[in-house]
Length: 235
Image (cartoon, rainbow, N blue to C red):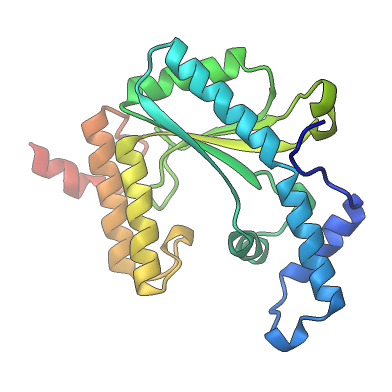
Protein backbone atom coordinates (compact mmCIF):
# COMPACT_ATOMS: atom_id res chain seq x y z
CA UNK A 1 0.00 0.00 0.00
CA UNK A 2 1.02 3.60 -0.49
CA UNK A 3 2.79 5.40 2.35
CA UNK A 4 0.89 8.61 1.56
CA UNK A 5 -2.00 9.60 3.87
CA UNK A 6 -5.51 8.50 3.00
CA UNK A 7 -8.44 10.60 4.14
CA UNK A 8 -10.23 9.08 7.12
CA UNK A 9 -13.22 11.37 7.82
CA UNK A 10 -16.57 11.89 6.12
CA UNK A 11 -17.27 14.62 3.56
CA UNK A 12 -19.77 16.13 5.98
CA UNK A 13 -16.89 16.43 8.44
CA UNK A 14 -14.86 18.28 5.79
CA UNK A 15 -17.68 20.71 5.02
CA UNK A 16 -18.25 21.47 8.71
CA UNK A 17 -14.51 21.92 9.31
CA UNK A 18 -14.34 24.36 6.40
CA UNK A 19 -17.12 26.47 7.88
CA UNK A 20 -15.29 26.63 11.21
CA UNK A 21 -11.98 27.55 9.56
CA UNK A 22 -13.57 30.74 8.21
CA UNK A 23 -13.87 32.05 11.78
CA UNK A 24 -11.24 33.91 13.74
CA UNK A 25 -9.76 31.38 16.16
CA UNK A 26 -7.88 32.85 19.13
CA UNK A 27 -5.26 30.94 21.08
CA UNK A 28 -7.68 30.70 23.99
CA UNK A 29 -10.14 28.90 21.70
CA UNK A 30 -7.86 25.93 21.03
CA UNK A 31 -9.88 23.20 22.64
CA UNK A 32 -10.62 19.63 21.53
CA UNK A 33 -13.23 20.84 19.03
CA UNK A 34 -10.78 23.20 17.29
CA UNK A 35 -8.03 20.58 17.26
CA UNK A 36 -10.44 18.16 15.57
CA UNK A 37 -11.31 20.82 12.97
CA UNK A 38 -7.65 21.23 12.04
CA UNK A 39 -7.08 17.46 12.11
CA UNK A 40 -9.93 16.97 9.62
CA UNK A 41 -8.76 19.82 7.35
CA UNK A 42 -5.14 18.67 7.38
CA UNK A 43 -6.12 15.08 6.70
CA UNK A 44 -8.25 16.11 3.72
CA UNK A 45 -5.51 18.31 2.29
CA UNK A 46 -2.82 15.67 2.82
CA UNK A 47 -4.84 13.09 0.92
CA UNK A 48 -4.16 15.20 -2.20
CA UNK A 49 -0.37 14.88 -1.89
CA UNK A 50 0.05 11.64 -3.82
CA UNK A 51 -2.19 12.75 -6.73
CA UNK A 52 -0.36 16.08 -6.81
CA UNK A 53 3.09 14.49 -6.94
CA UNK A 54 1.94 11.94 -9.52
CA UNK A 55 0.73 14.70 -11.83
CA UNK A 56 3.95 16.66 -11.31
CA UNK A 57 5.96 13.63 -12.42
CA UNK A 58 3.70 13.17 -15.46
CA UNK A 59 4.22 16.80 -16.49
CA UNK A 60 7.99 16.57 -15.98
CA UNK A 61 8.11 13.40 -18.10
CA UNK A 62 6.18 15.09 -20.92
CA UNK A 63 8.43 18.13 -20.79
CA UNK A 64 11.50 15.92 -21.25
CA UNK A 65 9.87 13.85 -23.97
CA UNK A 66 8.80 16.95 -25.92
CA UNK A 67 12.15 18.67 -25.25
CA UNK A 68 10.43 21.68 -23.72
CA UNK A 69 12.46 24.02 -21.52
CA UNK A 70 11.10 24.81 -18.08
CA UNK A 71 10.59 23.60 -14.53
CA UNK A 72 7.68 21.98 -12.76
CA UNK A 73 7.07 22.16 -9.00
CA UNK A 74 4.33 20.99 -6.65
CA UNK A 75 3.12 22.15 -3.26
CA UNK A 76 0.15 21.44 -1.04
CA UNK A 77 -1.82 24.56 -0.12
CA UNK A 78 -0.81 26.13 3.18
CA UNK A 79 -3.47 26.13 5.89
CA UNK A 80 -3.27 29.93 6.17
CA UNK A 81 -3.98 30.18 2.42
CA UNK A 82 -6.86 27.72 2.73
CA UNK A 83 -8.45 29.78 5.49
CA UNK A 84 -7.93 33.03 3.59
CA UNK A 85 -9.53 31.64 0.45
CA UNK A 86 -12.51 30.29 2.40
CA UNK A 87 -13.10 33.80 3.77
CA UNK A 88 -12.67 35.61 0.43
CA UNK A 89 -14.73 33.35 -1.80
CA UNK A 90 -18.05 31.62 -1.23
CA UNK A 91 -17.42 27.91 -1.23
CA UNK A 92 -16.64 24.90 0.90
CA UNK A 93 -13.47 23.10 1.83
CA UNK A 94 -14.65 19.89 0.17
CA UNK A 95 -15.15 21.81 -3.10
CA UNK A 96 -11.74 23.50 -3.16
CA UNK A 97 -9.84 22.50 -6.29
CA UNK A 98 -6.30 23.61 -5.48
CA UNK A 99 -5.46 21.86 -2.21
CA UNK A 100 -2.80 20.13 -4.28
CA UNK A 101 -1.16 22.37 -6.85
CA UNK A 102 1.46 22.02 -9.57
CA UNK A 103 3.10 24.80 -11.54
CA UNK A 104 4.90 24.45 -14.86
CA UNK A 105 7.13 27.47 -15.48
CA UNK A 106 8.12 27.44 -19.15
CA UNK A 107 10.87 29.37 -20.91
CA UNK A 108 8.58 31.05 -23.44
CA UNK A 109 5.01 31.29 -24.69
CA UNK A 110 5.58 28.62 -27.39
CA UNK A 111 6.52 26.11 -24.71
CA UNK A 112 3.43 27.14 -22.73
CA UNK A 113 1.16 26.54 -25.73
CA UNK A 114 2.74 23.16 -26.46
CA UNK A 115 2.41 22.04 -22.83
CA UNK A 116 -1.23 23.12 -22.62
CA UNK A 117 -2.08 21.22 -25.82
CA UNK A 118 -0.33 18.11 -24.49
CA UNK A 119 -2.22 18.26 -21.18
CA UNK A 120 -5.57 18.66 -22.91
CA UNK A 121 -4.98 15.77 -25.30
CA UNK A 122 -2.82 13.13 -23.64
CA UNK A 123 -2.91 13.27 -19.85
CA UNK A 124 -4.28 10.08 -18.22
CA UNK A 125 -6.40 12.18 -15.86
CA UNK A 126 -9.66 13.90 -16.75
CA UNK A 127 -9.41 17.67 -17.31
CA UNK A 128 -12.43 19.02 -15.45
CA UNK A 129 -11.77 22.66 -16.20
CA UNK A 130 -9.39 24.82 -18.22
CA UNK A 131 -9.17 28.60 -17.92
CA UNK A 132 -6.79 30.69 -19.97
CA UNK A 133 -5.72 33.97 -18.42
CA UNK A 134 -2.95 34.51 -20.99
CA UNK A 135 -4.57 36.32 -23.91
CA UNK A 136 -7.56 37.09 -21.67
CA UNK A 137 -5.78 38.37 -18.59
CA UNK A 138 -7.59 38.95 -15.32
CA UNK A 139 -8.48 42.57 -14.62
CA UNK A 140 -5.42 42.91 -12.36
CA UNK A 141 -3.08 41.70 -15.13
CA UNK A 142 -2.65 38.12 -13.93
CA UNK A 143 -1.71 35.71 -16.74
CA UNK A 144 -1.51 31.92 -16.62
CA UNK A 145 -3.29 28.78 -17.77
CA UNK A 146 -5.21 26.93 -15.05
CA UNK A 147 -6.17 23.28 -15.53
CA UNK A 148 -8.04 21.19 -12.97
CA UNK A 149 -7.33 17.45 -13.17
CA UNK A 150 -9.47 14.73 -11.64
CA UNK A 151 -7.03 12.07 -10.51
CA UNK A 152 -7.44 8.56 -11.91
CA UNK A 153 -5.72 5.89 -9.82
CA UNK A 154 -5.49 2.12 -10.08
CA UNK A 155 -4.41 -0.54 -7.64
CA UNK A 156 -3.31 0.88 -4.31
CA UNK A 157 -3.83 4.39 -5.72
CA UNK A 158 -7.53 3.82 -6.34
CA UNK A 159 -8.31 5.28 -2.90
CA UNK A 160 -7.19 8.68 -4.22
CA UNK A 161 -9.42 8.53 -7.29
CA UNK A 162 -11.39 11.73 -7.83
CA UNK A 163 -8.97 14.02 -5.97
CA UNK A 164 -8.64 17.31 -7.85
CA UNK A 165 -5.27 18.90 -8.57
CA UNK A 166 -4.67 22.30 -10.13
CA UNK A 167 -1.92 22.81 -12.70
CA UNK A 168 -0.80 26.32 -13.59
CA UNK A 169 1.22 26.75 -16.79
CA UNK A 170 2.95 30.09 -17.37
CA UNK A 171 6.10 31.64 -18.77
CA UNK A 172 9.03 32.69 -16.62
CA UNK A 173 8.11 36.31 -17.28
CA UNK A 174 4.51 35.73 -16.17
CA UNK A 175 5.80 33.94 -13.09
CA UNK A 176 8.13 36.81 -12.20
CA UNK A 177 5.15 39.18 -12.41
CA UNK A 178 3.03 37.01 -10.09
CA UNK A 179 5.93 36.66 -7.64
CA UNK A 180 6.48 40.42 -7.58
CA UNK A 181 2.78 41.06 -6.85
CA UNK A 182 2.94 38.63 -3.93
CA UNK A 183 6.17 40.05 -2.49
CA UNK A 184 5.05 43.69 -2.74
CA UNK A 185 1.68 42.77 -1.21
CA UNK A 186 3.36 41.03 1.71
CA UNK A 187 5.75 43.95 2.21
CA UNK A 188 2.93 46.51 2.19
CA UNK A 189 0.54 44.26 4.13
CA UNK A 190 -1.99 44.58 1.29
CA UNK A 191 -3.89 41.89 -0.61
CA UNK A 192 -2.67 42.98 -4.04
CA UNK A 193 -3.25 39.42 -5.31
CA UNK A 194 -6.93 39.95 -4.59
CA UNK A 195 -7.05 43.40 -6.19
CA UNK A 196 -6.99 45.24 -2.86
CA UNK A 197 -4.57 47.91 -1.75
CA UNK A 198 -2.69 50.82 -3.30
CA UNK A 199 -4.31 51.98 -6.55
CA UNK A 200 -0.89 53.09 -7.80
CA UNK A 201 0.69 49.69 -7.26
CA UNK A 202 -2.29 47.89 -8.78
CA UNK A 203 -2.13 50.08 -11.88
CA UNK A 204 1.64 49.61 -12.10
CA UNK A 205 1.26 45.83 -12.14
CA UNK A 206 -1.51 45.97 -14.74
CA UNK A 207 0.73 48.01 -17.01
CA UNK A 208 3.72 45.73 -16.42
CA UNK A 209 1.58 42.73 -17.28
CA UNK A 210 0.72 44.39 -20.58
CA UNK A 211 4.37 45.19 -21.23
CA UNK A 212 5.37 41.56 -20.62
CA UNK A 213 2.51 40.42 -22.85
CA UNK A 214 3.74 42.75 -25.60
CA UNK A 215 7.26 41.37 -25.28
CA UNK A 216 6.01 37.78 -25.52
CA UNK A 217 3.80 38.41 -28.53
CA UNK A 218 0.43 37.86 -26.88
CA UNK A 219 -2.65 39.67 -28.10
CA UNK A 220 -2.81 43.26 -26.87
CA UNK A 221 -6.43 43.95 -27.76
CA UNK A 222 -7.66 41.88 -24.82
CA UNK A 223 -5.67 43.38 -21.98
CA UNK A 224 -6.11 46.33 -19.64
CA UNK A 225 -7.70 49.44 -21.24
CA UNK A 226 -4.91 51.78 -20.15
CA UNK A 227 -2.36 49.68 -22.09
CA UNK A 228 -2.46 52.46 -24.70
CA UNK A 229 -0.35 54.61 -22.40
CA UNK A 230 2.28 51.90 -22.46
CA UNK A 231 2.04 50.79 -26.09
CA UNK A 232 2.31 54.38 -27.31
CA UNK A 233 5.80 54.55 -25.83
CA UNK A 234 6.85 51.65 -28.05
CA UNK A 235 6.16 53.63 -31.24
